[in-house]
Image (cartoon, rainbow, N blue to C red):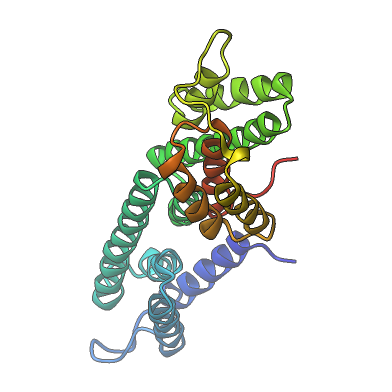
Length: 255
């Protein structure tokens, strides 16, 4: 199958041949009706690309015309507009990604950065953003694995997961909090008597069921109610953090 660059080169050669192989009959007559028709077709394709928001493709279409007819005012006008629209589109994607990063929505941010990078693969600053968002996502997944291990009482696996999470994101608040909570000699501010409180224990079991069913927001609401009475309960705090991580788009389960 012929590649896109080869197609582009073939069209350039063909248009150039039509435009420059023979002089115009008169000053008023078009240089070559066939070439003019092909150029008009390229401009139409560029306009169609702009309508669907494919500004990069539009730029290519108009640039192709300018490569063989550099003084074409219509092609130049549309090429300049496509370039400006492309720059604005990329800026909007990057800003949307930055806002998502600020809210901790790293998967959404990564999607915006990838789309911006597809529009302009030369942007080193966007590549850096892609790497940073990816590290945040990996850190969240590893913290989720650490919390799962903590709740299962597997502290070796928990520490390994937290070490990896902090390598990706040294400032991860949940990882640091869990590490501090489980360090040797650490004490709990308040020992919960949750099991001895029938009403709160029933609420806790209800939250666990919601969590297993994937209703993480409802589970968090139940556990936060428990924290109003037992604010120092480490397991409830860990459960809430685990549920919050799972609520993030694209977090997935860590095996």
